[in-house]
Image 1 (cartoon, rainbow, N blue to C red):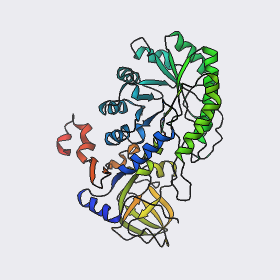
Image 2: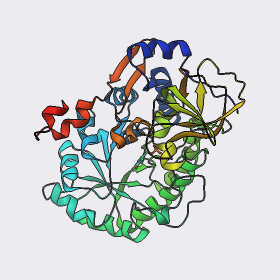
Image 3: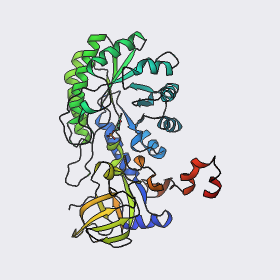
Image 4: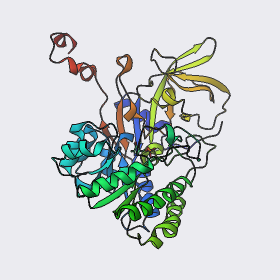
Length: 424
Ligand SMILES: *Cc1c(COP(=O)(O)O)cnc(C)c1O
């Protein structure tokens, strides 16, 4: 088993644990800032470039505010994400509302905030118009789904033909025509075709398809296309044997296709937007948990105080998350363990048959790359409570950015019933 660097030391984790018991999330502010700056630089060739951070990946206002320093807006897909963005002062066209199966009141709020609305389907046009009080905004975006397979095959969502999102090629033309008739003046095109792509080629390949589409749609409908939204899908190296993406190379790849396809078509004013979540945050957050039980039965088990409620990806997708045992970073990796949480579900395992150093009770384990789709995906199964989130600031101090849930939080939705008095 190879080693993977982490920003957490045993000393730091033990120090934080004195005040905030494990498990907890820890985020690396310096890492978040350095990466966000690199993203901005990689696309600085495009004057209109904008990263709309996918709030669903990490819906913490402190994180959103750090990213805001680098010009990031928010990509929202629900009522509460819109509310959170608004509360962070990220509003108007700083919000991209990329949702699907959208409830009426979510369109209403998106419109009220002045967000850019990205329509998932042609049948949403009238529905959305009604939610906007009868008149659509002047700028609208449409989500495209080419169907078939997307050939950069390496993960969770590389099968557009089987994905519920977006419109067909014909529906894109039809939607643009209808929207023009309804007074829409400026258009965006959006597509998300593959998830967690660990290759520098994904964005350039997607951009190539969308740029061709943009030229066609402009020619067919006369629409003014003001932006192309490459959405999310840029991956990270969860496993130490993977080569991380190089965002500068990714930006340069998109620039090459832009100059090849859009500039000659007289569309050199099109802005490039992205909606990265994972790439912005995953490596800069870890779940810190303590070994509380060992079990020697048909396998060797280490039970930790975190569970799938804190980090669901291994249970949900069988995802690999690297684990470092603090103080034993250099091995030897001579024990084979299943590392489990306490849910009454056998998929509640952070690692299966993983070679790790010998783990003693009380050891602190760092579960890597949990900064995106980690805390945010959590739930309350088995009545388990969500843990705290802590920011390791650029100056080395730590700050609580979300307290742990208490039983009172869990029971608060009974507050209108008699039993609540006994639960408080
Ligand atoms: C999930 C999602 C994203 C972010 O995806 P990542 O893989 O985290 O970059 C962006 N846009 C939309 C519409 C999404 O659903």
